[in-house]
Length: 162
Image (cartoon, rainbow, N blue to C red; front, side, top):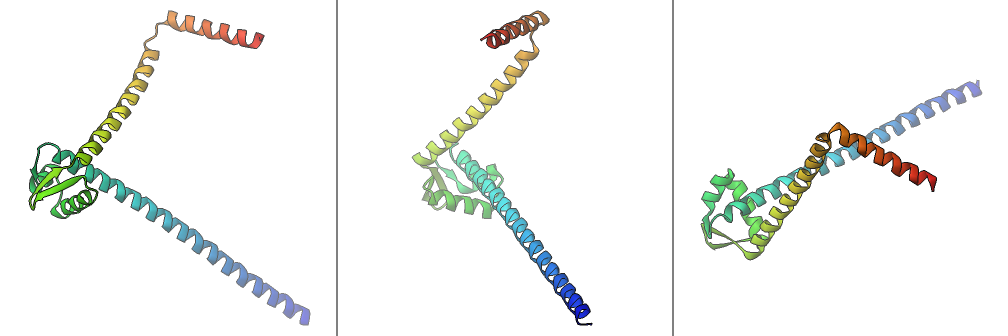
């Protein structure tokens, strides 16, 4: 009788421990998933802020001094978004406010904008080169392909011979 009670008690303890372990594992997995989702949301928010800031810099670079309202209209930003972007850019010393309603790009801001444009041009040229290489390969005539295959075969045979 005592052994049967011990077996039942051990079963209850084991089932309880298993249930608690399962809940803990699920809790940790949910917490980790929530943290990953929060990090992704923060990165998206940062990239949106960066895009908005670059857009404001681009619009401010069009003229020597631009009214903040004109920049917001051309960039299609709400007043709150414009104020936030302006505050961040002024804090980073990329733009300055010579008067309450005018914005001017600083030399540092102009340099950041130029560097960003150069990065975009570099990415475009790399993508264009890749596209050009792909189209060159497709434009080879059958004779050119045959000669390229023969050259490759000769090269491989020479490598295996050594």
